[in-house]
Length: 342
Ligand code: KG4
Ligand code: ZN
Image (cartoon, rainbow, N blue to C red):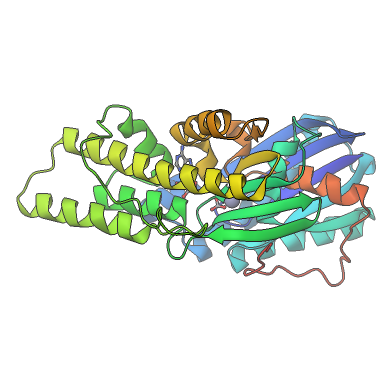
C-alpha cells in the first residue's frame, strides 16, 4: 500500500511517499521545506509566520514528493497527516490539505499523533521490534518515557516536570547566543569542549521515579553565563566547555532514568525517538548503557533524517494504522494542538 505522509505541526512543511508491503517499508520520497532562514530572523518559531509559510509551501512540497516517487494520485492507498500536538495555525494547514485531497481523490484518511510518528520512525528498518518496548521521546515540546506493550498500547511512565530536553538545548543556545535550533549548535561546539570542566546539576537522578527536570540545569548555566558576561568575558573556550558540560549533564539524566525504568519494567526493546535523538553523544551513551546494563535488550533509534520532524515517520505510523483499518472521517477530523498520546 502506498501512503502519502504530511507533517506541518511546527516549522517544517514535510511530505513523504512510502510503500509498505507486508511490513517491508520503502521510503520513495522524503521532502522537508524548512523555514529555518525565515525563523532565524526571529530567533525561534512565530506561529503566524510558520502558518503562512506552510500555506505557501504545502502544495509544491506534496507535488514534488509525488513526482520524486513517480506516484500518481490513483496509486495512493491512504493519506496520513499529523493532527496534533503542535501549533494550531500550523497543524490546520496540513490537516485541511489532507482532508481536501482525501475528498477530491477519494482516499482513506488517517489523522495521527505527532509523537506516535516519532516513535514509529524506528519501525522503518525494524518491523519486528519486540514488545514490551520502552520509548524515550525527546523533542522540542516533549520528554517522556512511554511503555509500549503493543501497537496502540501506550502507558506514560515518566516525563519532564518543566522544560523538555529540546527546549532546554534551545534556551541554553539562545543565552549563549549561538543560534537556532540549539541542539545541533550545542552538539557541534561541544566537540571542542571539556565536558568535565563545569559540574552542572543532574536533577532528580536520586529520586525514585522516572521523571525529569531540566529547568534547574538551564538556570545553573544561566547564572554562570550572567556572572561571566557581567565581568565582560566569555571566551570561546568557555562556550565550548559550557556546551560540552551542559550536553553531558542532559545525556546523563536521560540515559540513567531510561536504564532504571527498563530494569524495573523488564522490557525487551529500547526506542530513542524525537528531534533530540539526533544527538550523537545521547545515541552513543544510551546504546552502550543498554549493552552494559540490559542483557538481551535491543536498542533502536531512527537514522538522523528520521529523528527531527519529517513526514516519513507519519507515513510509517499511518501504514500501521492502515493495516489495522484505523481510519479517520474526513468530515470530522480536526487538528488538536494539545493531543497527548498518553
Ligand atoms: O522533534 P523535533 O524535530 O520537533 C518537535 O517535535 O519539537 O525536535 C526539535 C528539537 C529542537 O529543540 C532541537 O534543538 C532538538 O530537537 N535537536 C537536537 C539535535 N537536533 C535537533 N538536540 C540535541 N542535539 C541534536 N543534534
Ligand atoms: Zn517532533
